[in-house]
Amino acid sequence: MKKNLLRVFCLVLVLTMLVGVLPALAANDISVFVSVSAQGAPALTKDGKPAVLMEVRVPEGATVEDAIIAAHKAYCPDGAEGWEKAESDWGMSMVKIWGSYDGVGAYYVNGEMPMVQSWEMQAGDGDYVDLILYGPDWSDSYACFDQRTAIIAAGEKLTLTLTRDEFDENWVAQPVPLAGAAVKTTDGKVLGTTDKDGKITVSFAEAGTYLITASSEDFVITAPLCAAYVGPAMVIAPAKDISVFVSVSAQGVPALTKDGKPASALKVTVPAGSTVEDAIIAAHKAYCPAGAEGWEKAESDWGMSMVKIWGSYDGVGAYYVNGVMPWVQSWEMEAHDYDSVDLVLYGPDWSDSYACFDQRAADAEAGKKLTLTLTHDEFDENWVAQPVPLAGATVKTTDGKVLGTTDKDGKVTVSFAAAGLYYVTASSADAVITAPICVVSVAAPASAYKTYVVKAGDTLWSIAKSQLGDAFRWGELFDANYDLIKNPRMIYVGQVLNIPA
Image 1 (cartoon, helix red, strand yellow):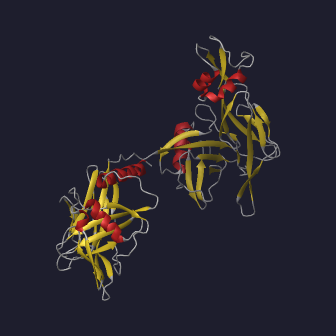
Image 2 (spheres, one colour; image 1 turned 180 degrees about the vertical axis):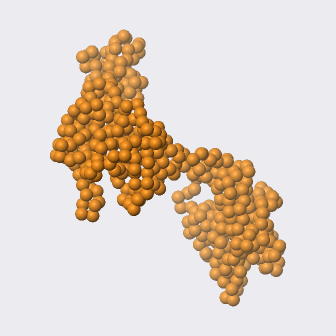
Image 3 (tube, one colour; image 1 turned 90 degrees about the vertical axis):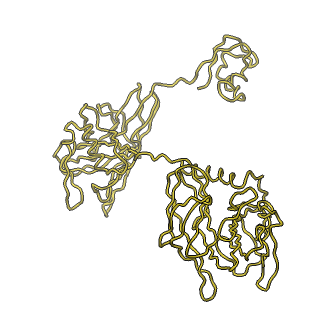
């Protein structure tokens, strides 16, 4: 995001530097960008700047010639007098271009020469027009970069491809890579040489605007141009760590950490790109009573095999990621930021059904109700797990306090009288289920009001504006203090008013 904002800022800033501050564009005007190449080099404007990407605004429906004339009027040292045309058997003839009578000229639109150049060719919004004054022998080959503008950060690499036109037997232009061309800025700083594919990679150490062009010792080419808008150097952030939350269910009940707490939503931090196994190992190292020795794996015909989980060799195990068992469990499965990993140690007969609440963590207020929904997996004929509501399950805290029983839709409503952290789990008399967990953070009851002491000059209007941010909410103040205020126009210094929180 920051890089995109940087690019937009640079583009706006540099276009302003190139062509000056322009008035608002009329709704029916279009923008055309004119560049002038004079006998192999960029022409100069009346301000001595390269005549590159000069923005002109012309009415919608204007011709390319209209844009060319507008560019002469606005930027040419000779103004409109720098342009003169004539008709010929070939269509258009440019007698004078950018104030010069030498040589002959043509124009290209968006990198292509119109098959028949005509005064009536219509310009389009955002068109690039290259106006070219050839050398006396017409030998110049039209050349261009694959990018006319580029937005990069200082130190960032920019790769450009340079091509020139070759004509086939039907005089149809075909762009071909131009190797060995000297690439440089318009002020003469050499940047390098194009390779066999016409490519060159450049970079700039400092922010600014750089106009890039090229020349060739093997061919007379028109001046190709790319305006590079270079912003401040980007700070490359180190690879991000991710947080993964691991819970361990051991044969139907939550496992315990080395501190004797439920092994539920154990936060581990691993580098981005880590695997689920990396997170599992990190959880064992940090929380398992047996440490890293509590985990042991092996390969099997099914992919992964967990020989030891949370220090136990009993039963068999699996893992679920965000409530879903991966179709093929693999040591290489990548973990993502804020994934929830349920590590399950089944009973010896594999009969445990995976169960989970719809919320793994919940915030509640003391005395207020919280509704949870419990599901467990059933497998169809293709052994694809489908979560279904689990009715009649006993919902309780991990220290054994029963909170209620799920209804036919797997729902249960619970509440807690005091603030604190509660680990809610469940068991079923009808099915062997893995231990579902929801960590509930319960806050003390919040007061419905704060108070305000009336000062001299106060009114309900002014108090509503200062305390509620909206003077028109004065009626809420009146309602909240109905037992104290009999007349909304009469409040007294020293009165303590209730302010809705």
